[in-house]
Image (cartoon, rainbow, N blue to C red; front, top):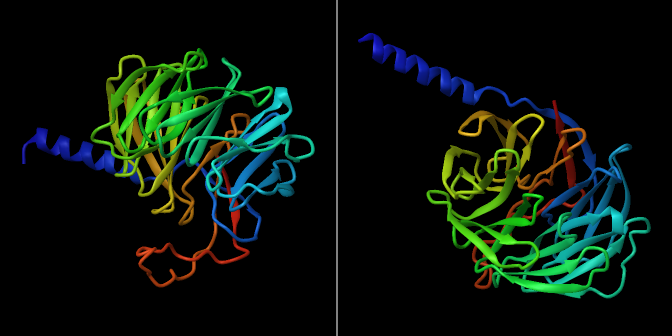
Length: 341
């Protein structure tokens, strides 16, 4: 065996071992919530030191100092996303079953006015501090209902041309979103609402979670076929494609650590990828979380990661209306998992 081949094998072995090593996070706290129902997004409010967790037909509010549930926002059927606007003293919740957005008071957790009609299947939402607008993204129909963040008034509709998943912003008037059905990441103007660019994510398919690094202009799209696609947001050029866990639905980027983290519900892991440079990325490791822990939230102050899940029971019998039923959720087992270094 020649020296070049030996060197190559050693390099590959080292790279594989490096990718399999433990990720630089561990479980800090398990926050029991209980009750029944499914879940989707969870959102950290650093200013209020709270965590908002979607849960069936309500939102659970957790105090991040005591790690106790301090309140519930009820009557949010099919809740998906939660966003807060501290300067306005209000928050926004997308309700997929009723195609509405519920507005609530941050102090009392009570609703403000009647629910706001949205496009079909409102899912992710995002407050853009630059435009001072809240964007409610439909996972069917390809549009975004746009609200004034201070008043909740509808100010427009963005036609985005696909089933929209997680958003991000460059902080200067451009919003990015993944289009799950088109396999694209697109950019649109936060004020004019016009689409500015579309970029294919192939070989990535069905992108959901989206992270962004404004310093290097890198977008991180977590895809259903176990790939993270890194895109230059200015040019649309693909920078890297990396392996991630199965069933990813969330992705965050922590500029302090340089880590991209995806939450992979089917494999029950976080995949941690480090940005060594704007053009070099490596898988640091895969941290075991729990089956079903598919979404993720980052606290930018503590750099802690949050996800949520519950225990699963057997799936109900298939029917003509539901030939592939999901496993049942064991009542009382819903919980939040908090990770840190």
